[in-house]
Image 1 (cartoon, rainbow, N blue to C red):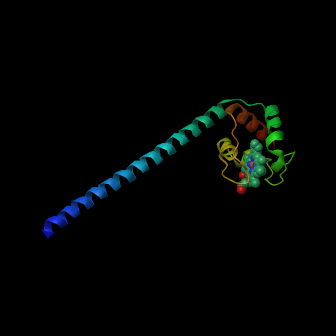
Image 2 (image 1 turned 180 degrees about the vertical axis):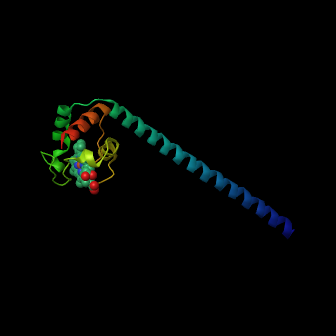
Image 3 (image 1 turned 120 degrees about the vertical axis):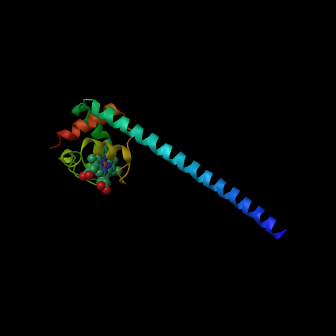
Length: 128
Ligand code: HEC
C-alpha cells in the first residue's frame, strides 16, 4: 500500500516536473524568437539607412529640431557631448544605434525613418 502510493506520488512528481520543463522551454523559445525578430528588423533598418545617400542640409534641419537642446546649436556639446569628429570615433552603425536605441539616458530613442536617419548621418559626417 505504502509502496504503491509512493510510486503514484513519484509519477505525479515526474508529470509536474515535465510540465515545468515544457513551460520553461516554451518561454525560452518565445524570448528567443522575439530577440531574433527584433535583431533582424534592426539589421534591415541599418542596411536600408546606409543604402541611402542622405542630404546634409536636411540632416542639419533635423539636428536643429531634435538634437540642439542637448548637443548645442553648433554641436559643440551641452548636456550631451560635442559631436565633432564623432564619425571618426563611431561607425555609422554605432551612430544609428545611438540615435534609435535609447541605450544611454538621458538621450531619448528617436523613431526616425531610414531616409531621415541617413540625412542625419550625412550631417554628422560634415562635423569635422
Ligand atoms: C535629452 C538630451 C539629448 C538629446 C535630445 C539628444 N542627445 Fe545625443 N546624447 C545625449 C547624452 C547625455 C549623450 C551621452 C550619452 C552617454 O554616452 O552616456 C549623448 C550621446 C550622443 C552620441 C554619442 C556621442 C559619443 O561621443 O559617443 C551621439 C552620436 C548623439 N548623442 C547624437 C544625437 C543626435 C543625432 C540627436 C538628435 C537626433 C541627439 N543625440 C539628441 C543627450 C541627448
